[in-house]
Image (cartoon, rainbow, N blue to C red; front, side, top):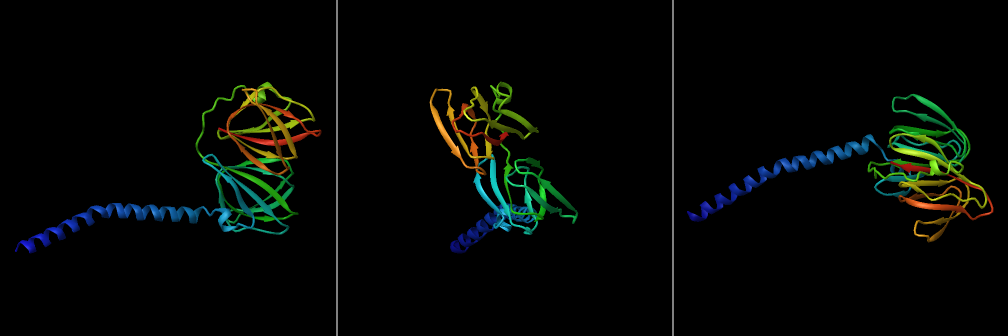
Length: 242
């Protein structure tokens, strides 16, 4: 009899555990279902169209995606979060929205654009084009911009766009020109020309940085004093993150 009672107790215990675990199992299943639905609703261009969209850098603030199309090429429907596009070449393209409506875009090399989150598919109507897309994530640093480059050196730093997520600054130096010490929050630099600069840091140390036209670089918040140490002018677009 005691054996039967023990077996009954075990069965009751198992039944109790299973019933207790059921809500957690259901919650986990719902979470998986939601994740699958999100992926379906927001197809990642680097997944659904890796020939045209390549992720080059990612951290908790941004993902940098390089976009390249040949003449006449097009993509399937895909999703971008809020992002800034920096155009390395001229662009002639047609964008189709999920509702079937279309829009034609014409952009010149060196321009930039902030685009809110959404889905579309694209078709290249011109020659080869290339874009650096800086996809934005949450995670504002709250960094105080002081001294602000735009305020202390307006000859080299020109603000061209600003909202509650980013400020876009165009930077242009002539050969041999230098700035004064200033601060940037976390930023992404997109180099429009070849670049050679000497950075003096607040402790007096110096660092030489070079980049090729078209490259991009995530730069953590900090102060520096830049000097163009090349014999040519250079230009870049700086996307400051808030």
